[in-house]
Length: 350
Image 1 (tube, rainbow, N blue to C red):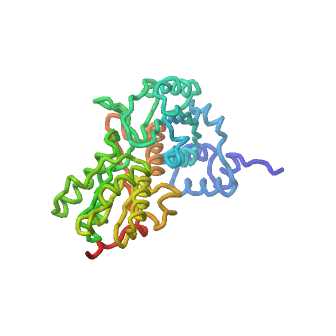
Image 2: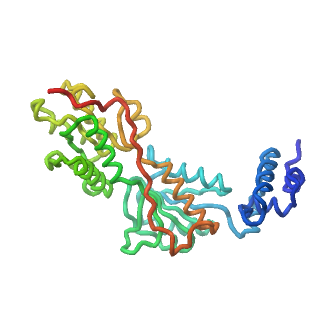
Image 3: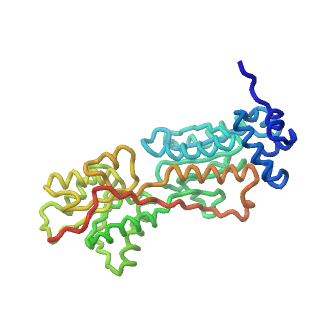
């Protein structure tokens, strides 16, 4: 069996001292080791397939190099687990591992779950939620560097940094896509009233109309809910029995499941998508938006990007490479992305 490479092997191959290897591979090379030497050390380490001993690193740095992640339901979610996936990408790349606990939406378990993670000597904590929402931050999260992902501190004076999607801009850009196609009568199935994301997407819808100098017809905005049956009922309300001149030419939905319901309603009424009716979703939910017939134009929630940004903020705080705590902005907003597929097209001629 081949002997595992050591830091001394890396030093000899790179032509540097053993201490220089330690500084560079522990992330402390800048200011201590010349750039050219850093490059040689990293190249030598890669060629020798060398990685620092995690236990030794932990003992020297007095860190566990473990990040605790608490989620409300992300582990069981069909798509929001991408937040944890993005966070884990960054953690692994920087020599950390993640431990995830899920409370299955039982907030009474939050405090004890955080204490369990702290008992494991985690270096930092992340709280992740399915869907944008305010939370009551467990007090234990204030004892170590912590960050919130897809949620925010409901306290009037938030104490933790949060990373969330830019829902207003997402709603605006979705509406702008339809306006650019010539649509002027756009109905909005806006989700449910108890969701913090829903009014933000409605605001984006309003902003797009205002920027285009167009009025917003309030009777075209419906708080419909989130599920397929709600989308079906909402679409039937604005389409069934309505003359072509009086029905909307496009329906914008607050999530992709609503858009599925709208598509089913259009089929029931004999309307072609997008020739007679354009349909816009939101989320870009895997195995729904891209597999629908026709495939769904939608706004992609940047879930993996949220996880990456949140973990980067957290690890920078742990390793002292970020901004000082009192100068760090409390909020990072990650842009959504328009995904154009087959369900939207030019406004039909009537």
